[in-house]
Each structure stands twice: as C-alpha cells, then as structure tokens.
View: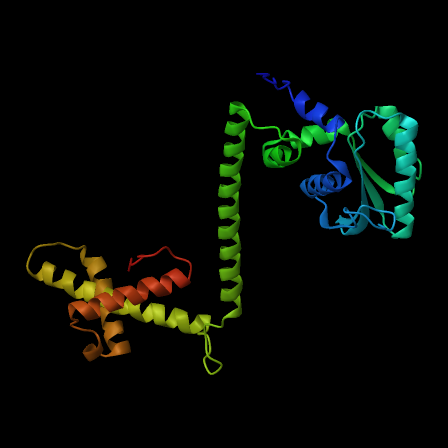
Length: 294
C-alpha cells in the first residue's frame, strides 16, 4: 500500500495547482470563486463548456465598474512568452467588452518583474494578476478550505479544522450582530416615520408645561406644609419662628390661588398621581426621574 504524504507549509496547494489536470471548465469555475472571495460581484461566466466567449472567460463587477476575468491553467510551468501570449489575447477582451479592467487568474509562477511587464502592457487598463503563489495563499485560508477540497482534493489537517470551525463560529456571530443592527435600524427608521400625535392634536408649549409643573409643586408643597403644621402643633417638631411665618404666608397664597377645596385631603391614589405627574413633567424639563423636592 502506498501512503501519499501531504506537503507541509501550504506547498501541497501550490503543487496541485501547478500540476492542474482538471481542464478549462473547472479552472474557470475555480477562478470565479477566487474572484468572489476577492470582492468581485455579479460574476457571469461565458462558455466554460465550450463556444465563443467574446474575448473573456467571465464578466464581473469591481468597485462598480465592469471587468473581465480570464483563467489560464495549463499543466506545469510554461515559459513567460507563452503566458504573455495568452495574457495579450485576453487583454483584447477588455476592449471588446468596453471594460475598465482585467483579472487574470493563472496557476503559473510569475516573478515581480514578469507581473510588472504584464501590468504595463496597456496602462489604460486596470489589472489584477492572481498568480500561483497568490491563489495558493487564498485557497489556504479557512474560508476557502471547502473550495480547496472540491477542486484540489486536499483534506483539512486537524489544525486547519480548528481554524475552519473557529472561522465559522466567528462568521455566525458576525451575521447575528449584523441582523440585530439591521433590525434596530429598521425599528428606529419606522419610529421616526410614525407620528405620535393625531393631526388634530398639538404639542404642549413650554409655558403650559411650566405652569402645570408649578401647580403640582404648589399642591404637593401645601400638603407637606399641613403635615408639618400638625407635627408642630403636637410638639413633635420645632421650626424657627421667622421661617414658619414665611411658610404660613406662602400657604395663604396657595389657598388664594387654588381654593382650599382643591388642596386635599388626597387618597393614596390621588397622592401618587400628583407625585407621578410632577416627576414626569420635571423629567421633560431636564430633571432626573423622581425629582420631587419642593
């Protein structure tokens, strides 16, 4: 029995790409998946099963501009002249399709100088070259392990399985957070569009709010004044005579303003309503809740 050992440090992906034997159709599908991972959108393959392709393997969109995608996956390393010949042919698809740029995806090794030569063949065209080392690195990321397994038949190591499931968990949490953010934004947007008031209703003016706040303040103060007066009469508390004289004068003015019949006594429910209304009005005016000082 022959046991095939997997090359370490990502080299297995590198060599399986270089020795590609799955044909043009599979290479174009893999290229489309790589471009999707890289942020390209609306990827539309031409004729991976054969037929005229109009000078491109796929049309796509990048940064809101039309691009073409071209895949070149021969078996084994080719000469730079062969690679350049294929790239020049694919470059014509940019002009035919009135595209802004070209994404050239290949399983070939390209040096920095060779990439620069290709990129400068037409400086009016935006270029992204996905060479062997670059696409191997993309396929060796947790998000792409499944694609790598499908197209290169490379199973995950134990370490890669840990990385993959960690990635999946993080993505799940991110999606949940995004859904919650979208839901909150939607609720806020709908709330802003809903009028709290009918067309026939008018919002109270600040003057009206202040007058109501002052009325509840007076009534609550007066009730507390009567309670203090009872405790003084019973000898429970003492108050400075001058202060008490001023308090009695203030009480007289409250009686004149509202009428003694409108100043209690209150049931527990009525007393709670008075305090609640004062607290609410003061909150509207900028106080903290339960600010009931008189």
